[in-house]
Length: 188
Ligand SMILES: Cc1cc2nc3c(=O)[nH]c(=O)nc-3n(C[C@H](O)[C@H](O)[C@H](O)COP(=O)(O)O)c2cc1C
Image 1 (cartoon, rainbow, N blue to C red):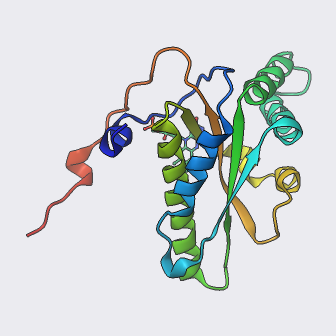
Image 2 (spheres, rainbow, N blue to C red):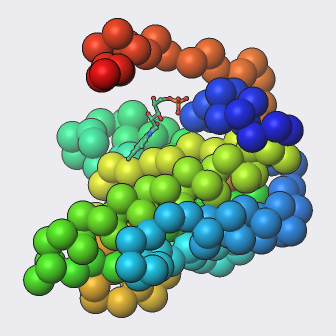
């Protein structure tokens, strides 16, 4: 897939097939992620690539948070928990991406966070060039201490995104309307 085509056609995927995704596809994507722009070459990112037991632990945690949106005794909680768990555990790969934070140096901290976002985009575009879809998710899981324990993150790491990785299933989502007129200004 040509680079520009990948940029234009990548969409957030919400329904994934259980079809396995070759480890080499993920490896190639991490290579692309590591080559993202990063000021002063701080390489502030860490990509935790989960399958097996670690993915199952994360999925359980996801189920827990999905259920906790309901009042106690609400029977919809159980369905939400199962769905939340199953839709993650069925993914071929889940990638937790962290940024090394430096609150004592706010400029570097912002630059590093931006660099991690660029690395995530590189990762997502690389797998997409091989037909594999992603969803960058955040929500309660990214701030959860239990998730940090599952990946054995250092104290100074913050989860920037949890990437769902798998072949898309069903019809491809269309891009949402963008507002170019408000977002782009050409200056002489
Ligand atoms: C920082 C960030 C956090 C996101 N978190 C979520 C999320 O928690 N759940 C979700 O479904 N999508 C999430 N997304 C995906 C966006 O909803 C998605 O990119 C947006 O709707 C545009 O769709 P597109 O990616 O198909 O262009 C996130 C995207 C970014 C950049």
